[in-house]
Image (cartoon, rainbow, N blue to C red; front, side, top):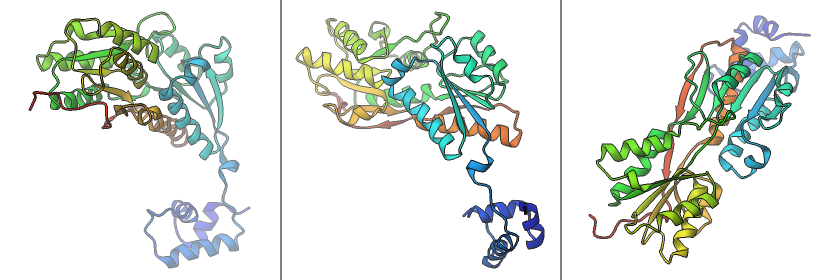
Length: 334
């Protein structure tokens, strides 16, 4: 059977050019004559390009820190996994999926060629995963071991964007409603959104100590935190929530206290989940590119194996503001 090198030798071009021509790469600059010569030569030699089905013997492991039930209620992690799995489907990569909540989860990952760990994990677990597969990437948590590739959101940039938006609207008394996340060993994971909020408020000399509320990353917890917030004598004029679900619960609590969003209190969320456009008022939020993070992670793992890349990469993905209806200019402000 003819190979790509046979076609290249007979057509008088490089194997790389042959591959790109046969795959209709639009970025390759070659004459139409050369392009046609390659196609004619491939036909003469009965060369058959390998399809994804032919060439992919790569097996991708996906380890998720949430349980299946928790993941179903979390758009952010669902989108991250969908990004990974869509990439794998496009490249005919087989998948071994495991949830950390399953005691036998790691047994399903022992023969994978690459491993994507989605969520937050303890140092001991991180080392255990590396021992299973050194071709590994962690998504949604910065891993400070310089030998490990990790991708996460740029939370400091994202929170600054959200708070800048509120300050420009004249708000200075801005509350924070966030959740606590726990590692599998029971330790609390450092929340960069909260740290970024505190840093911003300190740098801008704004009050914040009495305006921080913490619970879970859920609508029910958002409702409970906002209810506590509304019991104070001096209310904030704006609220930043660490995810959209918290914002949904907070809006319900505010309405039940005969207040209005955004007339009385402006609210800005985080994630840009699908429901943001369908609640009333539609939620202004920070778009976190969870799907793209999954795609990037899968691509890094697949490319590292294919190209023999061993140097780790650490990156933070930028987020951006999506303006809708839940924020407005504070009255008596310019």
